[in-house]
Length: 190
Ligand code: IMP
Ligand code: MG
Image 1 (cartoon, rainbow, N blue to C red):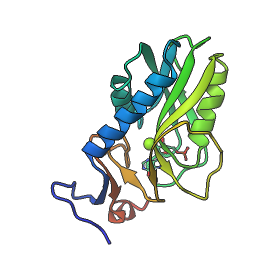
Image 2 (cartoon, helix red, strand yellow; image 1 turned 135 degrees about the vertical axis):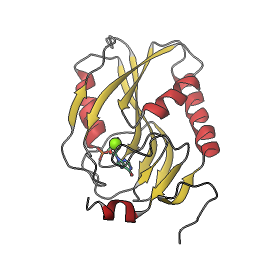
Image 3 (cartoon, rainbow, N blue to C red; image 1 turned 180 degrees about the vertical axis):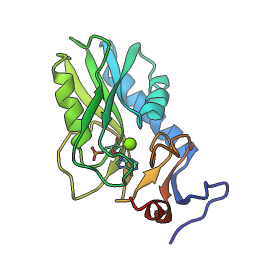
Image 4 (cartoon, rainbow, N blue to C red; image 1 turned 90 degrees about the vertical axis):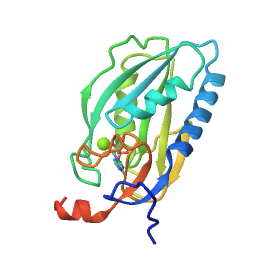
C-alpha cells in the first residue's frame, strides 16, 4: 500500500523519511562522531554526488574541528540496479596521512562503491577509516562487506530518491527521502 503524502513530488509513491526525521538522525550521528573523535584530526570524505547533501548537514552537526573533502565514484548510470563496476572519477585533494577519516555515503547497497573507496583511501595512509552511511539497504545481494560504524536508517529493498539520492541525476534536491514510483523508470525502459 502506498501512502500518499501532502506536498509529495508526484513521481514518488511514498515518503519514507521526512525532512525532520532526517535532520534529527543526522544530528545524532554528528554528536556520536564528535564524541568519538574529540582531540583527533578528523576528515570527512563524501562520495560524490549522492552524499553531498548528507555531508553538508553532517559536517554542521559535528562540533569538533574537522575538514572535509569529496571523492567521486560512479556505479549506477541511470539504471535502478548496480552495474557491477565502480569507476573512480575523483580522488581526495587534502592530505590524509595520519588523519582519521570518516567516509560519508548516501546508501550502502551492494557495497561495491564503499569497498572501492576504502581501497582508494588506503593509498593515502590515513590513521583510520570508518564509514557513515545514511541509509542501510538490507539486501541479500551484497557483493562486498564493509563495516558501517555510523548508520542512519535501515531500508527495505526499494529504489529511493531525495536528500542527495537521484534517479537519472534528478530528485537530489528533495528535502525528504521517498520511493520512486516504478512507472518513472519503467517508462524509460531502464
Ligand atoms: P553500491 O555500490 O551498490 O553499494 O551502490 C551505492 C551507490 O548506488 C550509492 O552511492 C547510490 O548512488 C546508488 N544507489 C543505490 N541504491 C540506490 C537507491 O535506492 N536510490 C538511488 N541511488 C541508489
Ligand atoms: Mg547515485
